[in-house]
Structure formats: structure tokens, C-alpha cells
Amino acid sequence: MPYEPPTHTVERSLRATTGAKIIAGVDEVGRGAWAGPVSVCAAVTGLRRPPDGLTDSKLLTPKRRNELAEVLDGWVTAHALGHASPEEIDDLGMTAALRLAAVRALEALPVRPDAVILDGKHDYLGGPWQVRTVIKGDQSCIAVAAASVLAKVRRDTMMGELVGVHAAFAFADNAGYPSPAHRAALEEYGPTAHHRVSWSYMDALPRWRHLKKVRSTPEAAALEAGGQLGFDF
Image (cartoon, rainbow, N blue to C red; front, top):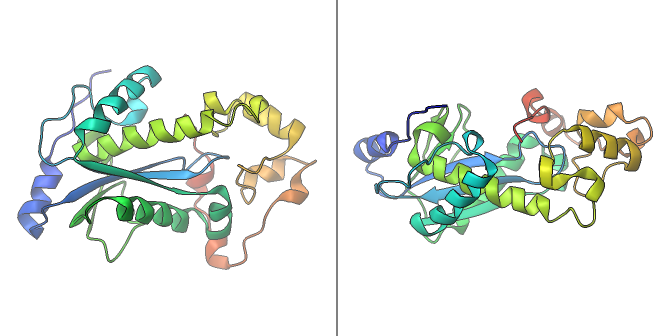
């Protein structure tokens, strides 16, 4: 399907209106998975022309994503990834876990960004970072698109490495998201140490419902409904 290539428009606007010189594009992957971390990539690209075919990782085939990630690894000025574990997601809720992963990614960059372009309409990062949210930024902004691809490939690789000990869950195919094989394995074997056991899918597992974790605070318990229903694997 044809798509408009991403541009530096938002980055140029930030430079002109705020004086920011170092701008990081930030995107997450794994928000809607039942297992595995939520992962965030922060990428700094400057204003150079991007590699051909760069766009939102969800619009690319796995083969093309992997090829592009190899190119991006050497093309970006800098990038870093941050993760929040399933246990942290269970304890904190998704919004706080996303912020934790994003801060870890941004603080792992070799230089602190002056501003951040964050994919989506909700600023889950907040101060002291100067944030510009962009809906579908992973399609329209070069730095965010680069972060999208790098985050997706890295997290998929991490989930694929779990196949040796959790083969029935087919994590290499579903990356921890709902799928027929994943559901069947949950019913048969119950959740692994990599599952988010505070989520509502546990209510549909009568044999394992007693393992469901209840968050300790009302704020953490208010997990976004969209955060438990992702099918973008």
C-alpha cells in the first residue's frame, strides 16, 4: 500500500520555535502484549535524508523491518532502548511503565536531547522533558519512524529468544501478543514469569485465576482499556 514518506517537518518546527538542537524521536512497542516488556526506543537522526522505505514498523514486513533496522543502526546519530518489565507493568500500570521505559531510553543516549517528539496524542513522558506529541508520528516523522523500527525489531528478537524455554507459547511468532497458540498455551500451562499477571485476560483462565495480581494503589489499578487489547503483532 502506498504511503507518504516521513519528513523532518516537526523537527524543523521544534528547532525554529524552541531553539532545540538535539531532538529525539521516541516510540514504544509492546503496550498491548500479554507477555514481555514494554520497550521504548529514543532515536536522534539530525536532518539527513533517511534510508529508502523508512516508515512505521507496523507497515513493514518482518524481513523488511530487519533489513531496515540493520541500516538504521549505523545511520542514526544515536539511539538507545529502555524497557519496563512485566513485573514493573503489573506494579505500576502501563502509563507509569511507559514513562519508566522512555526515561531509561532517553537517559541512555550519549547526549541529552533538548526536545522529544513522542508518537501518539498522550504525553506519558512529562517534565522535565520538552515534549511534542504527534499522532501517527511513526509514519510522519523520520526520527520517530526510526525509533519505531528499532524498538520493534529489538523487542521481537528478545521475545524470540524465549522460545527455547517456552516453545508452546510461540513467542517468536506473536511477540507476546494474543494469538491462538498463545491462548492455548496459557490455558494449558498457565502464565510464565514473562506474563503480565495483573491483566484482565487472567479472568478467562479458571485454572490460573488465583495467580492474578492485584495492584496496590487505585492509580496503578487504572490501566488503560486499550493497553490490554493490542493485536498489532
